[in-house]
Image 1 (cartoon, rainbow, N blue to C red):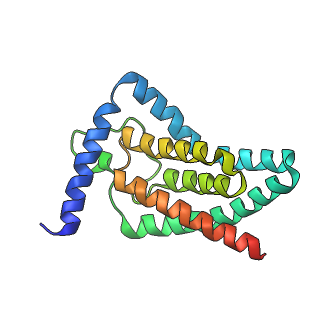
Image 2 (cartoon, rainbow, N blue to C red; image 1 turned 90 degrees about the vertical axis):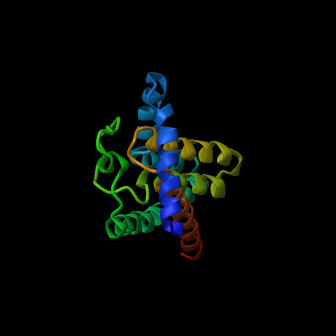
Amino acid sequence: MNRLQKLNAFDTRAFYWFNGYGRSTPVLTSSRWISRMGDGSLYLLLGLALALWEAEDGRAFLQAGLIAYAIELPLYLVLKNTIRRDRPCHRYAGFQAAIEPSDKFSFPSGHAAAAFVFATLLAEFYPSIAPLGFALATLVGGSRVMLGVHYPTDILAGALLGMLTAGLGIGLWEVL
């Protein structure tokens, strides 16, 4: 068994382990709510609110965020449609996801990428609430595994993509 096969086997075992906990009603209900927080519109609303209430820092946060998301979203779509990894709910006969995914492929997780863009932006502009931002981003990613639409490595890849594109967005914002 080569390294990629070993990683895939580990990822599948981890998926089933995490997903086993996601089948209880309280976990399933909270996972749905947490996942919805990561749908994207909340990030824009919070960015706009910060821009209105925190004139200088809020505008900087919003501008850097718009640049970061303008990089993250197309890159995420290219990766997802190039790699074309089937979602676990589409791969395993008899397995039913708790939600209907928005598309066919799972790698990387767009919810995790967007959540970690936002958390990284918070860390740069509002460092005192960075732990909360990263905790929420982790919960968003974890909820996607619990709901049966992502593997753990999808979440890790999304988190890495989000942090890297946020860093790039912040860097570009600083030079503009």
